[in-house]
Image 1 (tube, rainbow over the protein chains, first blue to last red):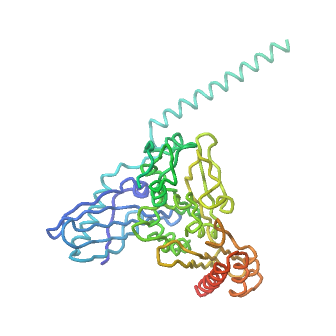
Image 2 (spheres, one colour):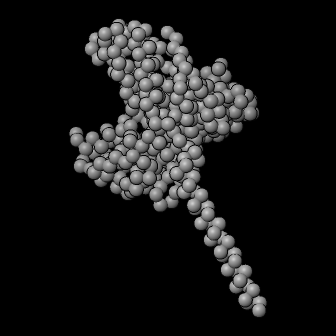
Image 3 (spheres, each protein chain N blue to C red):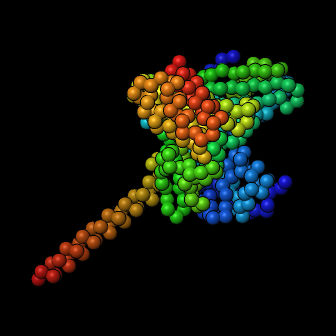
Length: 146
Length: 267
């Protein structure tokens, strides 16, 4: 069974992998439990591999979804065993979307205003110390010559 | 048996883990080798440093053509990875011989390397691929160890007690490279008696790494040289096996190298 979705999560969050975790849902009246994982990241492509699996809490049935993620898009295959139907695969992928939506966005330090302010202060202090040392050195040199 | 008493530390950052490591501490990754050793009381660390909470150590990434594997990456990840299947199929071929799925779900790549079991598959495959190991310690910072220098003896590596393996870097294989991993174990999933990992790219590149031919994973440089100069699979296999002491292992290694070379050639 083919699976295809568009995702709103930004690429850095998706490949950060912090969203990975448990999947619990109900499909066709049966409860399922499982997990989603980030498998690999190809920074050269760019693309990422995702793997999710869940099985029935009671009874016999399981679903495994292997997805390839590209920026804005998820596509892959679902494998159903036992009494699990297509609704289970859909619900498992819905769970992934919920995990991605709930994930804290990965913010690069370069984009963090607080970090940039701290960096600016440090740069100002470093420049100030450098200028002061230069002025003092020049003054000392002048005094020594005279 | 139950393990001897130990203190348990579960850090969530690499820095905290490095702080806890030392002479009488052992890092715990997947636990598929260390826990049996603890239970048999063959290992009696005073402190067990559980690395499983350090998320930053679990990743598998290709960047600038190089494969970077975090030490805590589970073995099953290699099995599932499209990046590995496409660029480094030898790793995917080797990991399928590692025990059973339940063990590969929990066992880590870094753990397999750091444990340095002479019958382990992944260190042999990584040796054939010229992997480099990045290790870190609180006192001395980071250093990189070449595949040939890491394994010293059975269950012994060049890692110092306060050092932690953090990343395995696998360079891109040459263009058009083909690989094969072949081993013999009495039952599938059991410790292998002998094995061979082979990477070939035309006449220019040949890498042959042997499992069970010595106390550590070893390359067969003479066989590689012969392959680069036009030797057949059978001739190169005979050269690779010649250095093995035991008669049975020599015959087995020779046969397995021949099969691996022919498999790689067939693509």
